[in-house]
Structures are given as structure tokens and as C-alpha cells.
Length: 582
Image 1 (cartoon, one colour):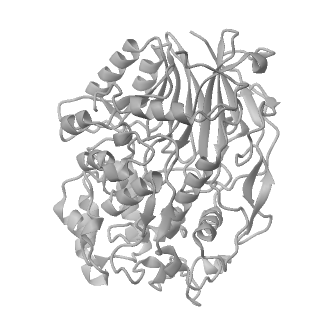
Image 2 (image 1 turned 30 degrees about the vertical axis):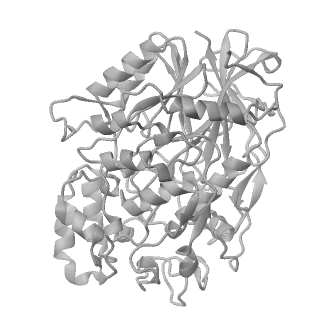
Image 3 (image 1 turned 180 degrees about the vertical axis):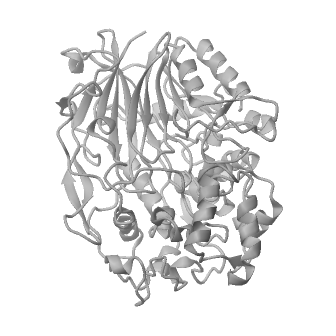
């Protein structure tokens, strides 16, 4: 049966997705930002006209089907004009930009096109156990962007994103049904078992209590009295209330209340990121004292600017991949730590435990079992696999984390060889590759402690390999917390690298990607950004689950002082990306 679909069809195809979920359970498989990294920040600007030049064809096109509700084509959340703390409102949507660097757009293609696949990318959810004793909030003393005032609300924000995906009637350009959702890593933040349970429950459905330690009370930096942090229930002046952040009585009690997630109604697949693979997203596993701090009853909440800057440099300059500097600092500051309730659920999880948790029937949700991972992954100790997006389109999920430590990534020879073989084996299918890291952030070639003799490969080598296979149409990733779309010309084919902003930093986005055949020798990838279902306007008196999700967005928009770059330029947001059909 042909997997192609006419764009005139409006059937949602629930039965077809069920069949795909079952197929994915036996898919071919080899079974196998950290906040300190230099990343841009942004509040989303108002819509601008597409920019002319070599990076965009500068053709602003209206969507060709009326399925824009709930997408950034219709409207975007934006801070209102002013200074200090800014309330949120709605701004005009972002238009679609046609990009023809890899193939020229031909007239009439909208009437000829056939839908091949449509999926949703979720990336960098960073579900945070904000009371975790090992967190590095005190680096706020050296850098304002090292702590987020909205960290206690990541679960509520992620559930609201799930609600948005579930509410989408169809793909916005073709009107085709959505085939699946794919996460591209940093699903958790501290590599804590609490966070892994919350992430899997958010996507699979169920009840979550985003709290650890004392079940009755919040025990973290936001009721510590330390003026580095926003103290939402206090009348004292802290660094954030001086900027106009509100006092919200009952905020912390509401933040740790039970949350209910409907779970995604689409089949969903999981890709691993550095925060999922390593404690704090940058330290190799193996230090028993760091693990003891994670589950223990003492938490460091304050540090001098000089000490914070030294620790920050040791991480950002890759001087401390095993966490020795951090461990020694914590040992030297034990008397300055505050008592918190110990909790074994905060223990770090290993890559093998990460895969095993995905295979747990309790987290099956809309399926498939394992969400891409298989028993073969578990036995081989690997986290890469293939899965069918549709009958004509294959998904390949990679593991670009470097277990030796540090937040930037790389890929081992065994996985690179497997990828080359997989792309040759499936040369008759279009292929979309998923990973956490971007090509530019795969610069860490420290050996994997489990495979010390295996060579690690940087992003340029992965780009070159993908360019040798004309069936590769896109590489979809995250990590940099910024919308960025890059064309790549290879020795045998061309593809688009599509990087999407995180859901923990404003503008808090996910992305729909549609692949179509234009029946004129070209393919198009249509990308459309979406926000969570929470309303743009917030009410400080509304501490319901939905009200907190809206506040999550507003606080994130006010969290950082730097410019409007995370949303990217017009050609990195809602786009049509053309390719020659091979």
C-alpha cells in the first residue's frame, strides 16, 4: 500500500497511526545544554518581513491549508512594550519563508504536492527537580543566566505543550494527519530518577507530583531568603523583585501540587541528550560522593561571585569532566550547606536505566513499547535505533552524548559505521535523522570510558557522512536552545539541518515538520513552530495547573536580559525548505 497522501484528504487516520505504532515495536534497530554552555537568549520579537539574501528566497507565503490554529502562524506570545518586568500578550504570527538554497521553488507546486510524512519535534524540555541538592543554582552569583526563576514549573509547562500537540487537528500546510512525535534530548535536567519519572509520565499520561524531599513543603532556593533568587512568597527585596517580579503568595505550594497529564495521543519516540546521560548534563558517571550529595540531606545554596566564576570556568572550558572540582568545592563548603530532606529518588540514572525505564509498560502511553528503544539496546548498552515515521520515511535516532563528560557531544565509530550501513540499506526510503546535538556542538572527542579505544567523531564528520547519502532529507536536533536552520550540500546529496528552540527558555517552542513531494523533481520540508496551550495572558491569582503553565512562559520571558535571538530569524522559524528529489 502506498504511503503517500493527497493533501486534499482531511481524514485524521487514527487507525493508520495505530498500525504504525505496532510496526515500530519491531523496527530495525542496532538496539542500540547544560545551562552554562554559551547559548543565546531571547524574547520573541514581533513578526517581521522575511529578509532577502542568499539564506532565504524571501518569499513570504500564506499557509496553503486552514490548519493554523494553535501555531505561530496565527499568533505568538510576546512581552508587552516597556521596561522592567513585562507582562505577556499576543503578537502577530510569524509568516512562512520559502528557502531555495538547495533547490529552486517552482510555481504551482502547492496544487501538485503529496504528503509523505508529518511529525512533531519536542526538544530540551528540561524537566527539573528544582529542589535537587546537587543543582548549581549558586552559579547565579557569577552569571544571571545560570538559574531560571521559573524552574519549579517545568512539569506544568511540559503538560501544556502535550495539550497543544493533542489539540492539533492536522498538519498546518498539507492538512495530513500527524504521524508521531519525537523528542530530541535533554528531556530531564539533573539526570535524576525523579525527573525521568516525570518526563515519561508527562508524555505517556498520568499523575505527577513535581516535588521531592519533604512531601509537605518546598525546600529549595526560592524560600531560602538568599537574595540571588526570586523569593515569590516573601516581602524581602531580592535581585528579581528589584526588577519588578511579582510577589505571589502560595506560588511554591502550588508548584509542588499534583499535576495531571493526558499524555500524547500520538506515538512518540525518545532521543537522548547530555542532561539525560550525565549528572547535571556535564559530569561523567562514577563519583560516589557526588551521587551521595544527590540523595543526601545537605544543599549548597549560596556561593561568592569569585568561587562561582571559578566553577563556571571549569565546566565551560571543559576542565572538570568527572566533577572533581565540584566535589572538592562541596566538601569544603559543608558547613555552609542547608539541611534538606534526603530522598533516594533523586539518585542519578545510568544510560542502561534510561533505556529500561522507557521499556517499562507503565510508560507505554500511545506507544510504541520502548518509544524506539528495544531489548537489543538494553543488551548492547546503546541508545540509537531506527523507526518508521511512515512507509516511505524512516526515522533514525542517534546518541550524540559523550559519556566521558562535558555538555558538547560527538559520535563513536561503531555508531557512525552503523549509521552508514543503515542509510545504505534503506536507500529506497527518505530518511530523517534525529539527535540532540547540532553539527557545531559536536566538538567533544573525549573517549567513552566504556569503550576507551574507540575513536569519537565531531559534527563535521557526521555532516559529511549524511551528505554521502542522497536519501537523507533532514537532520533534526536541539541543544543550542535556538531556532536555526542550515542547508548542507554533500558529495551525493543535500539536506537541511533543523535546530529548534527549547521549551525551558522563552520563546518555549516545539516544531511540526511536514515532508511533501512536489511532483516537479523537488521535495519540500515545511516547518511550523508551536507554543504550549497555555494562554498568553497571565493572572497572578490563578495558581491552577493551566495558570501556572501560563506563568511559566511569562517568567521565562523575563528571566534573561539578552536580546531576541533564541527565536532565530524569519528563515529559521516557519519555513518551506526545498530539496531536489533524488
